[in-house]
Image 1: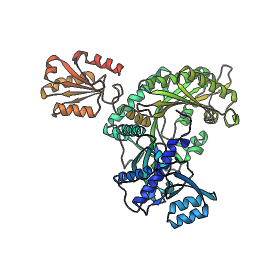
Image 2: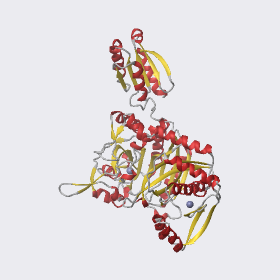
Image 3: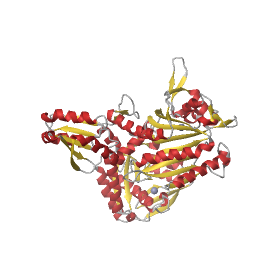
Image 4: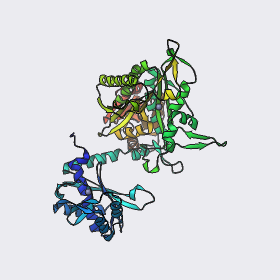
Length: 580
Ligand SMILES: [Zn+2]
Ligand SMILES: [Zn+2]
């Protein structure tokens, strides 16, 4: 990695220049096109146009060809400035209303333009020196986009493309793109029968089918098994709440635009809970705690609701109702270290199961502005030192971000790298000195005095919906044996083997998630179906197996076939479960 920011890199200049060339190609194809904006973006560039004819995906290759014609002429990219009034006059004359509006809204008196051949575009740069520095190029897709992102404004046509410094880089990018597409949870999830959406229920509100529900429970149980060993207890809370709770917690001020509000028949205002912490404080506060009862650790997997804008919703990654595997620890300041360590152990153990590599971001206070933070500076120093030293002892990559802490406490965010190199934010451990103040949470210490409690917010998966979307894409739907909703599918080859198949099925359903297929389909068809369902182990039972009291197993992960005696099947699968 070099240290040049993307905005100053050569790649950025190449993409920016490619956007201008795209505008030239579009004007050649549709001389009446009105130009809007055309910036470089993270993985390429786009340009928005109001077109006078319909653009199909096929036209993209026509545009791409004329872009290459322009690029190959190796035009220099030059800059000039125009007086604002002159620029506006020109855009009026050229009938370019969007460019005119952009120019009008700029405060400078001299406006900057970049030109390629005779095409000049209002632009601050930077650009490459000449067009043949664009070595590789691809127009990718089109989409509708409102002018200025405002739904009351005209809908424009956005053309997305990407450009690189070499064909090789472009190919690598396109390969990753098609790999990501192949793994897309929005397509794979419904295909594997995990979840669905309904127009009647509403966007951003996924419905979990039986297999998806099994998957959720398996994951949640795995987190719970780890938490149970560390002394957590399960709690449960209602999903609607008087708004007073959020006024006290401070969330009303911060989140009121994202809250779903519910009015009772008596006219009282309630809200769907956007988080669980305030409820949990009330469980803690319901009795007086001696230092001997501390810490209290509440675990609660439960759904929260946030009114996201419909344009922002995407599959399971951005939803309106999502499930947090939430936990809150109420402890004494002197117990912070042990609690954070224990929690970190849980996070490590959980992510190890999937082979995710974790990276850690420490969000710390800004030492130059101690007044920004709630609580005593010594308390902060100590807490931050604790987080640092724990991070150090874990031998993980740690990025310290000074000034990124919330006013109420420092936090640790865990990032997981998936199988195609993308990074996702997953678990979080957050210290909170604020909520205990607001809700007056304390324990009685050894001297019989009140001691202010510290609250630690912990999520291991974070949002189950988001975590499952990451998991689907990480494995491309090929879940390991311990996670797969159906672990083993038994296929009975013929009528004669059906009864025996059922017997085998009954013998393993207590320990394993099994399915039985005794349909009249051919064996080939049954195998194909099970393969499409991505079942990790397929067990075939025909007359030979019936006679020998055996099953033939087809192992998805290794493509192996194995014959196993029926009486050894459970122990074989148990070993298999531990290994995969
Ligand atoms: Zn430009
Ligand atoms: Zn919380």
